[in-house]
Image (cartoon, rainbow, N blue to C red):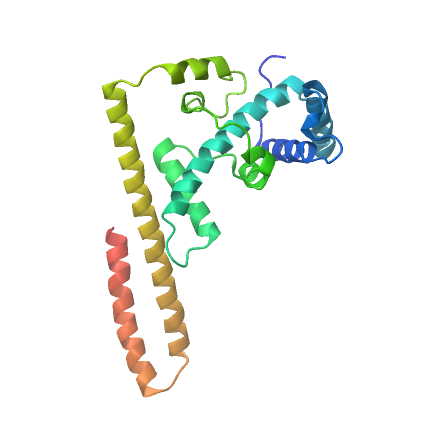
Length: 230
C-alpha cells in the first residue's frame, strides 16, 4: 500500500491502547507469534475505531514512529522531573516537558495521548530505547522508518571532537532552557497564590486585613510587572 491518508492523533492514541491491550493480555500477550500479535492489534484497533482502512503493515510502520516518538518524549519528562520544584504537580511536570520539547524540537509534541497510555505500561517501558540517530526524523512520516541496522551502525562509529562538543553544548542549552521554564512556572504559581489571598482579604473588614491587602496588592503588581518584562 502506498502513502495513505495522514494519521490522526485519535488513531495514534488508539494504536497505543490496542498495543497495550494485546501485549498485556494474560492469555495471549507477546508470547504469540509476531504475525498473530499484529493481527490481533489490527483487529482490536479496527473494531475500536469502526474502520478498516489501514493494513497490518501500516499499523506496524506507524507503531514504530509512535513508540519512538513517545520514547523520545520520555527523555524530556525525565529532565523535567529531575528539576521538579517543591509543590509542583505531575501535570506541572508534564507541561514543563511539553514546553521544553517545543523549545528544542521546534514543533508541538503530537503523541501526548499515546504517550500517557504507553508510559503506564510496564511492557512498553521495558522495550529497548530508540537510538538518537533513529528519532531525529519527522514523526509524521509513516513511509520512512529508520532500520535498526542503520541505528547500530551509527552507534558503533566513534564520536569526533566536534560532534562531542556539539552534544555537550546541546545538553547545556537544554538544561538552561528547562531551568528557565521551571522558574517561569514557579513564578506563575506564586502570582496565583497572591491573587487568591487578595480575594480572601478583600472580603474582610478588619483593619489589619485591609492594611495587609494594600501591601499585598502593591507587591503583587510589582511582581506582575517584572513577570511581564521577562
